[in-house]
Length: 353
Image 1: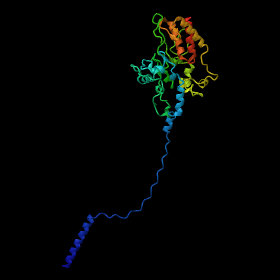
Image 2 (image 1 turned 30 degrees about the horizontal axis):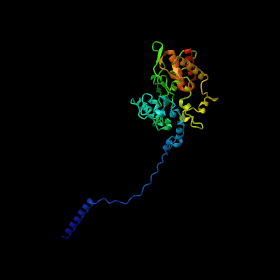
Image 3 (image 1 turned 90 degrees about the horizontal axis):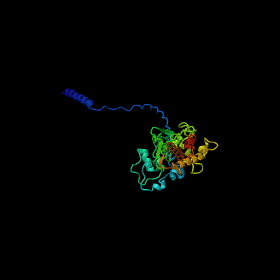
Image 4 (image 1 turned 30 degrees about the vertical axis):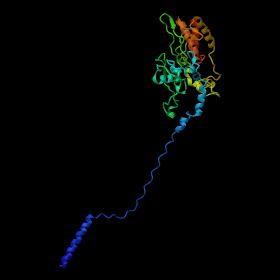
C-alpha cells in the first residue's frame, strides 16, 4: 500500500515539473565579453567660406561711396537742368501742376520710369512731376551674383536701343552706356522731299532736339548733302570704336566734384589716356564753319538765333538747317565724331552757296 502511494507521489511530482518547464520564461545567461570598437571615419574637407554678403552690399550702399556721387551730381546738367521747356528750367516747370507728352519720358523722373517699365508715358500727364534723380536711372539689381555677373549698378537699361525715329536701327554701345542712348537720341528724323523739292518747318521746336549725341557718335541721321567732304563709314569714329559714354564722362574725379563720376563732365585723365598730348576741346576750324553756316541760314530765314523758323523752304535749306541744329545740340564741339561733323557742316555751306 505504501509502495503504491510512493509511486503515485512520483507520478504527480513528474507531472508538475513538466508543466513548470512548459510555462516558465527562458532564463537569460550572463552578458558576453564586449567586442572591439570600430575605427572612426575620416573627417570631410571643409568647404570654402562664402563672401560676406554685408561687405558686398556696403561696398556701394555706404555713405563713403554715395557722398561723392551725390556731390558730383550737383554739377551735372541732369541736376541743374540747362535743358529748357517753354522758357522754364526743369526746377521751375516741375513745380507746375501738370507735365505730360513725350517730353516727360526724358525730362521727368516719373515719365522716364514709365517709359522704361511700361513702354510709354502716361497719356494723362503727371501731376507734380519731379526732376531727374538717382531713382530715374537706377532701380534694383538684376542679379546679386556680382562675382560672376559683375556689378549691374541697378541700372534700368542695359540692352541695345532701337531708335525712336527708326525702330529698325539699333545702337549697342556694349556696356552701361546703352542707358544713355534711351534719351540721348533725336526725336525727329532728317527732312524729306515733299515731292516738289520743298520741306515745311511746322514748329519752332523742329530739329533733332537736345539729345542727338548717340546718333552723331554712331555717324548716322545727319542730312548727308553732297559736297567736297567725304562722309566716314557708319560706326567708324574712334570714340565709337574705342570708347563709350561711361568711359569718357564718368571717370574718377580729379580733386573736385565738377568732373567725372555723376557730373558727367569728362576728366583730363579720361582724355589723356588716348590723347597723351592733350585732347582738343573742339574740332579745329569748326567754330568758324558753324558761324558761317549760321549767317547763311539767317539769310534764308530758316534759323534765327539758333532756333528754327516756321515756313516752307527748299530741301537743301532744310537739310543744312538740320545739320546746323544737330551739331549745335550735340554740344561736343564736334569731338564726338570730328570727321562726320566737318563733312556735314562744310557740305551744308557749299549747298547754300
